[in-house]
Image 1: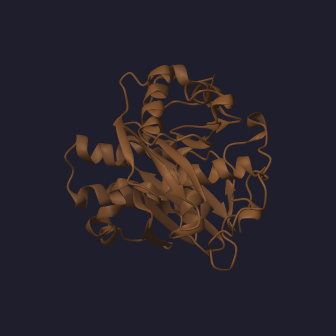
Image 2 (image 1 turned 60 degrees about the vertical axis):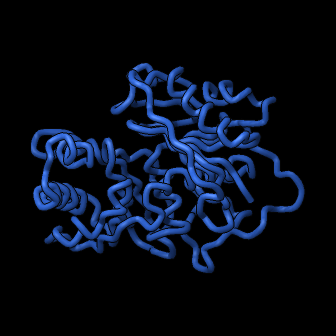
Length: 295
């Protein structure tokens, strides 16, 4: 079963068809630079370019770096402020040819999408208790799970750290902009993790984003955290996979916030026989979990 996923970030827009049996990309992903200013129309054009690269027609899941409820974007920390209050799911659906064009879009928070993928196929698979997935990139995204169920739109990157938004002190972008050594940056990440741990007492932190490919350079430098800390297994593809999961869930009419980490093989079964009835876009909350029918 293949569904298309697009991950909209502050620096790039990337996407690919996803094989939902394996929880991995079915083709090499295609990426375009996020336009500046990152207005809704300009970003929608970028999404269309990524989808058109594969000649895709069918449901599309897309992530957004901010709060998303009912397809509407509510915050815009790292993109143009004109996103706030925009019915972004409708905008992207229209840009891809509309419902009649065969590319209905399901939209959800980017870190929530990455978290769904990691909990189903990656480092959080089979884990119970409180698990927090953090994506370190242009900002810091967060996805909080309790016994495999997602608390949507937590946005813990905006917690205050030394008088600033945490993502203004400990994101990967800050490391690059300030030319911080791995040691100095790891200390900032450590302070942030200690603050989040004090608030939520998780059993596990999963560190995602592109920097997860270099986990050996900074995770061993982090000390004094009681929770286990592991790198994301899907690395920077987690958002694409999670977006595709959300689109499948919407098409299958799944209940929002379904559990994503049940015991068992961790792989979805074949889709139910016959074409599933897709829930109306307005009924798809952000984000949605993995459908029971796909377990």
